[in-house]
Amino acid sequence: MQPKIWMNGRLIKWEDAKIHVLSHVVHYGSSVFEGVRCYHTEKGSAVLFLKEHVRRLYDSAKIYRMEIPFTQLELREAVLETVMASGLSACYIRPIVFRGEGALGVNPLKSKVEVAIAVWEWGSYLGEDALEKGVDMRIASWRRIAPNTTPSSAKAGGNYLNSSLIKMEAVLDGYSEGIALDMNGYVAEGSGENIFLVRDEVIYTPMTAQSLLPGITRGAVIKLAKSLGYEVRETLISRESLYVADEVFATGTAAEITPVRSIDKYKIGTGERGEVTKALQEAYFDIIRNGNDKYGWLTFLPEPKQKANGMHREVAKA
Ligand code: PPE
Image (cartoon, rainbow, N blue to C red; front, side, top):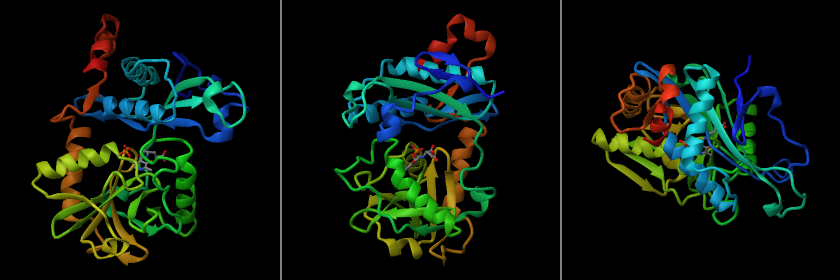
């Protein structure tokens, strides 16, 4: 049986969570969404970066002038409620806000803002063994969305048309993923991940203003890297600096920290997972596997018996 889906304030059956074909979102891509993971840590199930993801959802909605008819606290609670109702101890969580029925025509302001949260099991994003062995990527022939066109810092459904072109091109050519350059030819991001490179133990990643989604994993990895003593530079990155890097890795909620072993058939470093990538993975996995919540990034699910006495609300607030 599929998990229940939270829709506009209540949990309903998976098969009942439907929308009309004339919903604004179907025609114009008018949605904003999040991807969140719940991990089964040694200390219990916990949602990673719940507050940060819900906040970014509200930021994305604000950019598109969508009023979400719930508070951030209510949506955090709804996420926890949906995960708990699923009975899954680990899952991927997809909160989505979209323009539903109202009036067709580009103007979205006449269409109702609807909210849904679905959960499902989602394993390795870029293939089996990706986290250990690394993946093969190419530079996309498609550029990433340009500044002041569709804003890349909003995680909006429409942005993923560009991502889909990048991904299809890569997959049909036998690569796991495509890395898109920005309008000026500098490295932007993958279709669903941020990109980092390492050279002489210094870590580089494109700046957030550069046609990319400011990934929550990206931010966490920068923090972890600094705490491990690495210098991190957010800067312009040329295409060719990827080819001669010692290490390249991709970050994202789904991709976690995935090593990149080749780009455009150039072997990156030794062609195996690099030392810096490995150290960062270990620090990240210590949190999500061992449940060592050093930075307060985890929201542990309350035990079932605590649900009745209001623990749930307290947890969502934390
Ligand atoms: N860039 C893009 C374009 C992107 O979609 C993601 C997440 C990131 C960067 C990394 O962001 P963050 O998850 O906050 O670290 N991509 C999500 C969707 C993947 C999908 O196929 O759908 C994800 O990883 O959940």
